[in-house]
Every structure is written in C-alpha cells, then in structure tokens.
Length: 197
Ligand SMILES: Nc1nc2c(c(=O)[nH]1)N[C@H]1C(S)=C(S)[C@@H](COP(=O)(O)O)O[C@H]1N2
Ligand SMILES: [Mo]
Image (spheres, rainbow, N blue to C red):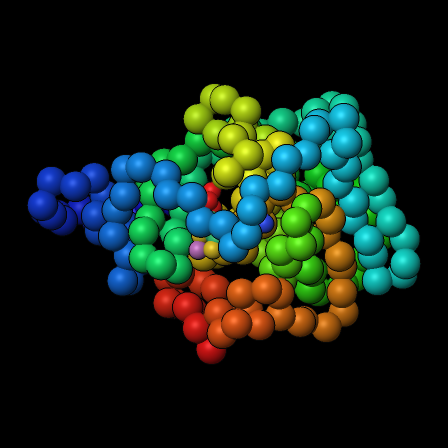
C-alpha cells in the first residue's frame, strides 16, 4: 500500500514518501486500548454478523479457522500520528464472510468483547480491503493487540480496526461508534487526514 515516489531521497527512512500527511514512522508496535484487555478463550469465542433483516450468522473458532485464510501485508496508521509499514497478518477476508450474508446495508457497526464499537461503511470492508485476523508476524495475535481476533481495515485510521472483535452489525444508516461519538471522524481516511469532525 505504500507509495514510493521515484526520485525521492529522504533521510534514509524506508518509504517515508509513502506516509499519509502528518504521520511518522514507528518500528515498535504501540498498544492503544480504551479499557482493560478482555481475555476470551478460543472455545468461548464466536463471531456474528447481524443483518438489517434481523438474521444473525455465527462462526465458531473452528469454523473461522476452516475458512480460506489470507496473509495480508499492509501499512497501518494510528490517528495519534504513528504509522507502521509492512505489517504481516493472517486471517479471513470480510468478503468471505459477507458473501454468505444476504444484505444491502451500506453501513456497519463493529462490536468488540469489552464493549468497544466503531462504525465502518460496508464498501470499506469489501473488495479485499478488510480482514478478521488472528495472527500477527507469524504468531497468534497477542491479547493486548486484540487476540484472539481483531478487525483489520488498514486503509482507514487504526481505531477502525476493532480489537477482540465479537460482531458486525449491518445497518442502513450510519451511526457513530465509541471514538466517533467522542469527536473522531465518521470514516477516517488517513490520506485525507479525516481525523476529527
Ligand atoms: N476493542 C478495541 N479496539 C480498538 C481499540 C480499543 O480501545 N478497543 N483502540 C483502537 C485504536 S485507537 C487503535 S490506534 C488500535 C490500536 O491497536 P494496537 O493496540 O494493536 O496497536 O486499536 C483500535 N481498536
Ligand atoms: Mo488510535
């Protein structure tokens, strides 16, 4: 996803020309959580998608693992201004889930174990742009980073990537989630600097 501008000679940092405006690179992986880290055993974990028609689809951990797995390598951008390039994940595309669901809703609300919510337009979950991931850097996703599984929507600011993902609610009208109710932008495109509204 990074853009390398030919002829760009920066300060020796990798792909600095590929950072969205106002962002700086970090090599480590900061933890940003609005509350305590919930501990969910894989046996107790389930992921549901609830449609605007009142239908709920469920996947157990075993069913989730049996779906086609992808290994996206993507750049992530936190609204607090750090970006991390080339992060490697393993999980299931949202296309795979949504293809099993009858819905024409244009918006969604992601709900996490622990109560966090964030709204994401369905178009931003489609066409290979978003995943439910359970591995980072070749290892099971650590609880503080959202394990056992989190949403990954790397082309939007990282607050949209709900950790400890529990359900996706498909809704006809957009509504603010946790940070969006506290002033963060409804969509959050880092390339347009949609930080606050
Ligand atoms: N459930 C939940 N998901 C969350 C958050 C949170 O507090 N709770 N924080 C968000 C924010 S603001 C960011 S920047 C990223 C941080 O992910 P990390 O801790 O793995 O770096 O998770 C996002 N997803
Ligand atoms: Mo964030």
